[in-house]
Length: 237
Image (tube, rainbow, N blue to C red):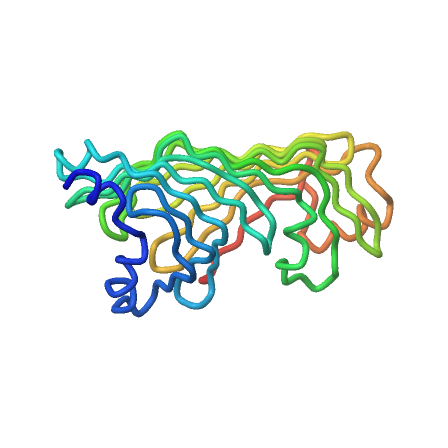
């Protein structure tokens, strides 16, 4: 009996997944406890491919689902692994890391001037807890190493970009710090669950920044006495 339960095929999940209108799964294999999905689609806009999971059976005794996951997405290309925990009241993400090359991001940037991004990006979620659509807490960061931007109007060496992620009062918060000889940037972004956002901070040109890009910064407004430009935007996604 135990061996039968241990080998329950992952395809048994398909009838339940078919009832879900926003989540679609293609090509399941393996078992319920340790399986593989070729592709997962969420709301027709988000895709994750080559997902492998391993379910901790003992977590079921505490009315939880603790699942170790690994993925290697194809478009854009990125890899990651971590742990997802689901209970009756909340969802948790623990020790999740995701790595991708910055060149994979460029095609998804809707900007007036086409740009190419270069470098290596890593997302680390040490811990995140959600109750429904509400965020209880996030301890996470994004690091963009050897960050560079290339465009027809010039190139920018950003060196390293560090982003701290958190949440408070149903807002997601990103605090960005970037320092190089080309540019120095300090930004805070507050994104509410209703889609409204505010962006504040400042940006300061460095001694090695290309002249035509220095001139382009003037659209940000009047330069402060310390040489920086103040940033203040708000809107809705």
